[in-house]
Length: 304
Length: 260
Ligand SMILES: Cc1cc2nc3c(=O)[nH]c(=O)nc-3n(C[C@H](O)[C@H](O)[C@H](O)COP(=O)(O)OP(=O)(O)OC[C@H]3O[C@@H](n4cnc5c(N)ncnc54)[C@H](O)[C@@H]3O)c2cc1C
Ligand SMILES: Cc1cc2nc3c(=O)[nH]c(=O)nc-3n(C[C@H](O)[C@H](O)[C@H](O)COP(=O)(O)O)c2cc1C
Ligand code: FES
Image 1 (cartoon, rainbow over the protein chains, first blue to last red):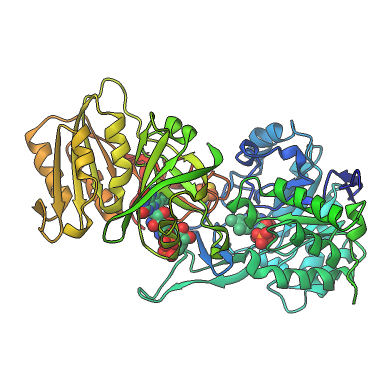
Image 2: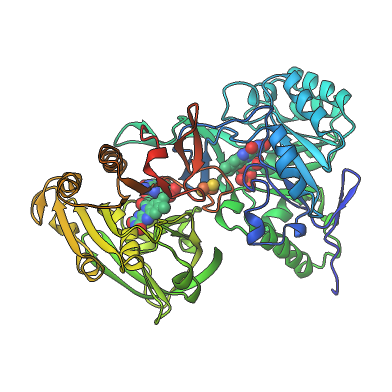
């Protein structure tokens, strides 16, 4: 096969490929740009941003568990104003679509950030309602379908910018949350965020993380993530960004087959600073080897 | 900073639980500054994901090689130490900030504890034209490594062991107090466990002497992107968290808050 069409249509735009850098693992793109061409990303999601600067949680903030990474960063970020004035202008010099991941402690805070992003050169806003590492906000919104609905509905009224909602896997019924997002007017759903977990040093009887608990990511959570993407894709019409433990091209193909239009790469960026580029090349190889001429034809094709 | 594959030239066990490994790399050997580290991927099939930060301990520009010392702590360092001559290891480096000493500073004290001695060796090599005093603290006689290499670059080398088997019996920071009392020095560069570094900082403040320390913290990316490697740094009104991998590992001791 001569050429493989790697593009996917997502929120009215043609992404050059389905690979999206996941929030919090790619900062604002500058560090990784030393190792790869960030314009080769389907989209780039920035580190979670809040109204005011956040200094984050006490160290240690990251450790390794079998096939996984446990983190408790706590949304350390410089705040929305600093981001818009000092970071976004640099980032928007690149042609890559930029997704702004935001967190708030109240519906008002989400709206406040969203209003500031009006008329900025961004592709979409991703509402992080699922961070397990902050006391207030984040995950609180993400675990009740009623509060998700209220939040998304209110933010929807405040802006026409495409809205993605990032869901927490720490819920009883992921589909209920996803359906609320769709009904409230979300344009897409991103799943999954990290699974709440902890690690203990048996000798000292102390938690390894300064915050005691953290969020688990990496290959350890891939089966959970695939299951959730598959379940949600059967219940909503809006497109999905699927993520959780994607380390290579085949993993990415699995998420598309389960129903994702785009595929997020998180932990792999910590392991290899050029992971996103590798994964999209491997996905292309996968297509070539399996006689697939356009990668979008994989979406939602699970045979069962 | 680049991602490169480096060939293992040699790997030998030099003390109980401590290995010395030499790698070929034109790039790292010419670019590395004292205090910087290589972020090393464990072999593909180990099941461990994250890289391990290891200091660059010396360089050989003629052979285009560099040396690291690894102390086995857990599974990751054990896997690193099991690599053999001819293996290629996936590294990012050189990473982070470095001991930055201006030209006018002549009399330098290096103070290291345990495996924290490793990055100071590159400092000794790098600043060998100045007057170097190296203070090396080891747990016991079975852990004493690379003393003769420090001797090559230093005006004097003083050793301590906790069990008094070699050199001064006690803490290396006691030796620091002692020599500051008797001589004139311009700056102190330190690396080792946090309690030791805290004491070094206090001693330097009391003696009004410039001090830089190299910190350790669990790391994710190693390139500044994940905020995983936080250390507490003083600000005007309070404190903030900075990145050990990018803003550090070397900081001025005055700005570090040692309370964790
Ligand atoms: C800048 C820097 C330079 C270093 N230089 C050296 C060196 O030259 N020689 C040497 O032997 N060691 C060095 N270390 C420490 C070394 O990185 C750790 O001992 C090693 O990561 C432990 O891994 P493990 O899997 O064997 O231990 P485990 O305890 O099994 O590790 C579990 C997890 O904790 C992390 N971790 C545990 N202890 C540390 C630590 N002290 N620092 C960073 N991460 C840790 C590991 O990366 C891993 O994610 C350095 C650390 C830093 C930050
Ligand atoms: C260090 C780290 C920081 C993260 N920060 C954020 C964040 O700020 N906002 C967010 O929505 N998700 C955050 N996440 C979650 C990831 O974006 C992703 O959803 C999750 O890690 C699962 O994907 P993975 O297994 O590929 O890492 C973070 C994950 C990690 C490992
Ligand atoms: S380890 Fe990722 S920012 Fe330092």
